[in-house]
Amino acid sequence: MTLTAQDRARKIKIVLFDVDGVLTDGTIWIYPMPIAMPDGSIVTKMVEAKGFSAHDGAGMTLARLGGMKVGVITKRISETVAIRARDLKLEFVYQGQAFKMKAVRDIMEKAGATLDEIAYVGDDVVDLPAMRECGLAVAVANAREQVKAEAHYVTPSKGGEGAGRDAIEFILAAKGILEQVIEASIDEHNPVPPSMDIGKGGDLK
Image (cartoon, rainbow, N blue to C red; front, side, top):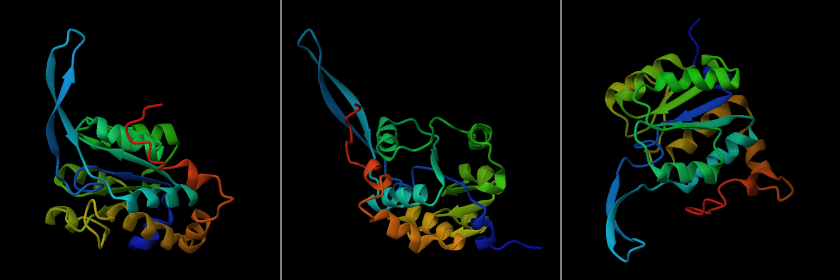
């Protein structure tokens, strides 16, 4: 029996995302920042910046309310990603991962999850090994054609423009709880929404 994308989505307990091109539009900004040294001299440090969609952040709140855990697995290492992950209180954050199935296997062990309970959202060929193994493979609208060809579901939105939210809502809809979770997210008596994505940005405290 061939499983539909909805069949696969109903089993999902963990949603994992690539970052560049999925939670961002793929643009990487690198700019110089002057840093004052104790001796009064000025040195220049190169700083990396990325832009994230607020819709995706809200989507991760929906995922949490729907009983799922969320994480990122990315090849690059960036403090910007670390800050965003802290704001969103992501359960799994793996940077510097050239071979992403290594991180997936570690997450499976830590979470006691099976592959069919994991969704992976990607956009480029580095994501294919994880997409081929995980229960639900999602490609964003701006993914490479080779990646779209192997996805169970392709989001209507591009990376950095709400694709992560699309993936989460697709899963919640397949589970039949999307509207229930949306209502929970706007309930002022629910403690989960205010605790996530509170916008501290670079404040590490």
